[in-house]
Length: 344
Ligand SMILES: O=C(O)c1ccc[n+]([C@@H]2O[C@H](COP(=O)([O-])O)[C@@H](O)[C@H]2O)c1
Ligand SMILES: Cc1cc2nc[nH]c2cc1C
Image 1 (cartoon, rainbow, N blue to C red):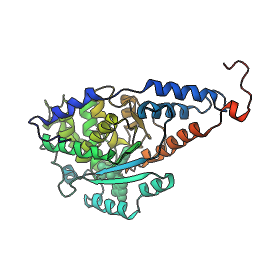
Image 2: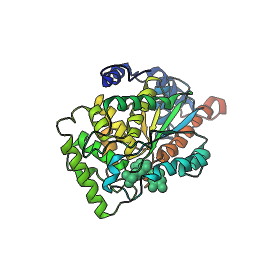
Image 3: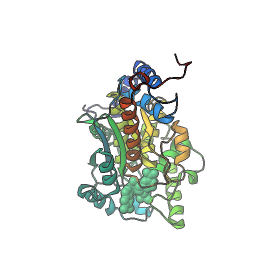
Image 4: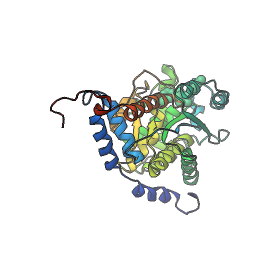
């Protein structure tokens, strides 16, 4: 899809929104009917049952299946780091990509433990985005081109997509996006990210306040929020979420930064995240409130704040187990187990 050819690239993105398919209710009905026959008390697998229905609804399959789960990590660098908003230097973004390639990061181990595919996208790491206290992080064409690149996440035919990111400074970008979309005191959206101290937290807050002032009057359009305050990884994740929806691939979101990309889409269309599951509630302060605003109940709450898709990947293990349980269990008739006498 050439998204950068038209004169008004954001229009190309907006055109995709009405093309988003809805849930496959027939597939859900098939799952519900089989669930009633499985050798367990009705409802006893709790949220696992909802998760299987969700996979069926978005895969469009009465017998959902997870054969090609993939974790995609998008990495970008941020001009705003020059203000001292992260305790780590920008060089760590690339160093962590090397660590991913060598198999030494946390996400590598989780992917190995749960047999998940793993892809990393280097989004012009040598070209950090503009410092959004002074200028837009991205111009419109680069923003759309990066969203289009994010759509590559589904190339090769994933049937469950976990989204993650890596980018020193990107919790400041996420905070700015939430402040712009949701308003309220800026401090509420600014957290410690990788672990910044009190002075750094104050700098982060001032940076987000300055960003909102610089871009005042241009933040009513969610795509403008994305390009002005986002990073390349945030734009790519928005593209990946959209592409997955169009191809009927269920998505598991990771933490605070991935949810900033998701929030942009939700602001464009309230149903845009219906195919998304929140993998976890991150320990980044405002993530809980963000999830409430997105209408998503996290699968896990483990006090994690790493990023890299780790929360999404852990949840993928549960989603895989839920689907395998549904597909593999015997029915009451097959196992000759007595049903409740009042079961129809
Ligand atoms: O996913 C989260 O909720 C999350 C919370 C805190 C930090 N991170 C990760 O930490 C990096 C950004 O933190 P910072 O302090 O540099 O803004 C980035 O690589 C993220 O993946 C991620
Ligand atoms: C070491 C390190 C690993 C990370 N993974 C995701 N964000 C990160 C930030 C740092 C600093």
